[in-house]
Length: 211
Image (cartoon, rainbow, N blue to C red; front, side, top):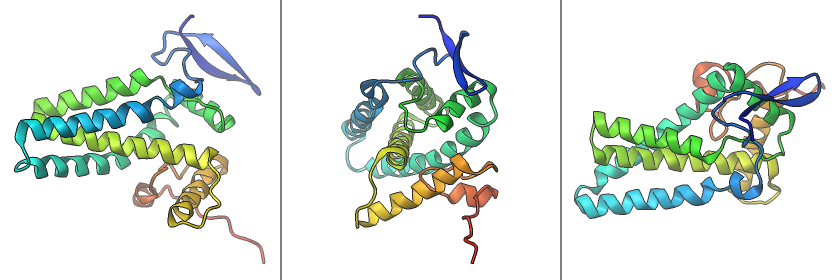
């Protein structure tokens, strides 16, 4: 199949030939769409066990702190990628626009794109700091990414009527994210947390009801 990108033509979606990294694989079946939810937990456990085998329990708190830092870093990365890449870079904006137009469809980049990004992050941190910090931060970053995937899937596809605190939290995420999709003003770029929207002034106000 030719490499392709997605473009909008009026209300219709056209596939145009272009040597773009994501190729035609932006509309997935369930196996390819959810593959990362099965692959990356294995990677996280492998990184954890390798660190224990290499450094033992005595040095493991350093890895855990790095993992916590990686998870926190993910929340900022999620915000920045969503705001400045998915809403500003032309080709990615077109792909993301397709998701906005068809939010229930299984639309996303191929697995290998995230593999390259996380592997590059690991290699960079290992070069600049050391292997243990790279391993921990990458595991934390992956954990944050997995949480994002689950929350984003939940806000678009899961029934969230349950009584548990988790259901209430996810309903809040859903309302915040739906405003991102429907509000004419850009904002609410964070999916897992509204923290960075509050920090950078992009949190959208809740609609007010007329008395």
